[in-house]
Image (cartoon, rainbow, N blue to C red):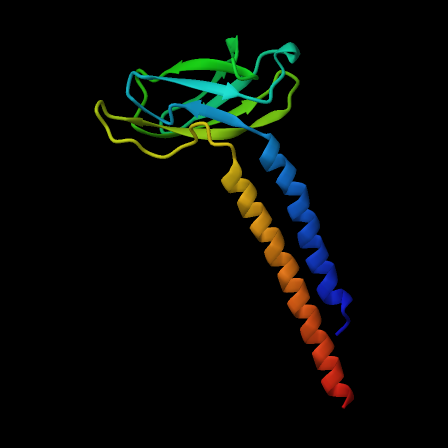
Length: 163
């Protein structure tokens, strides 16, 4: 068995991880608050969209929705935002995917519609994406560690066969 049979897949994994990390770090759509009762309002923000390149489009999908919402204002913290009223929404979790005016995607986030007085649920509420970035780095480190272990095993197997 040649070392290239081990090193090529390991190198491919490393390259794939390196390509995915910048996208996870740059794309950033937020929904605030992450949980709202029926009839509440959430603010959708595409933080990396340039207001000069046109309106952002937020695609909202969930239990009873598949609609587009156009940005209405430049967000105070940068990017573009829109308000979404949840009157008439079915209870559940909704996904918001943003596309900037120049056609580039800005990531996605979720929010949950609860009954009036409902408990808070998960979602992205101002999350900076550190968890996604940490996961990518962990996967990349695991691929490197696996490549080192396989290379060492190969070297020991060759040495044992030579004796």
